[in-house]
Image (cartoon, rainbow, N blue to C red):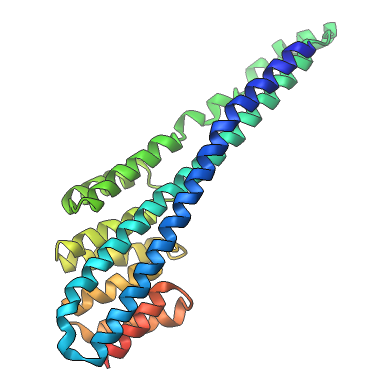
Amino acid sequence: MMRRYGLIFACAFALAQPAWADTAELARQVQALQQLAGALDARLGKLEGAIQQNPQLLGLLNEVEMLKAEVARMRGQAEVQMHQLDTLGKRQNDLYADLDQRIADLAKAAQPAPVAAVAQPAASAPTTTPPAAAGGLSQPDPLVESRSYEAALSQFREANYAGAIAGFNGFLKAYPDSALAANAQYWIGYSYYALKDYKSSLAHQQKLVAAYPASPKVPDALLNIAANQIALDNLVGARKTLEDLVAKHPGTNAATLAARRLSALK
């Protein structure tokens, strides 16, 4: 019996090692992406400040827009890798839970069962519900979910915005309760913005704010809403959106950018 326990623990240790290594590598990549995105945000702020001081530098707007797209792509990569980190952590927990259950089952099997206890399960069998029948089959595979999201985001990174919209719509249909649902809604809106379909972009970002008010993506969505309003010549609405963003989400990168754009609109 001790030999069987030893074998189980050895298998658990061997299986856990690659997961820890993957987790460490993903964490390193996420940190690098976040640092790069921060550097790009700082450069973007300097360019916007220069434009405000000298209207003749409007030619730099093209570079600003390119930097915005690059920041968006980098943040998208970070989102995917953070989700993969969460998935790895959940799989490790599942592995340990499964091993604990196997050890408990082995311990029970090693003990002789009383005669009365053997007859009891038969009497209560009709009222017992197997754990697997309680809805486990309805739970989506987190790895498949992550790959579906990443596939749609890769379309965005490749500037295939129509493909990104289709991919994220498919993701939301398949995983409406996903932790990444608000993110998918944001990228749909941003893809429409990249296609210069400002009305559709505005509608989708407003849907995000209404459907996911607690999401960390709300500040970014509000910033994109203001950009759409400016593109649609609704300067009053854009100013109101930016003011709400600064007031309700202080300390966020989106609020910092919103404050700069408010200065430009005055």
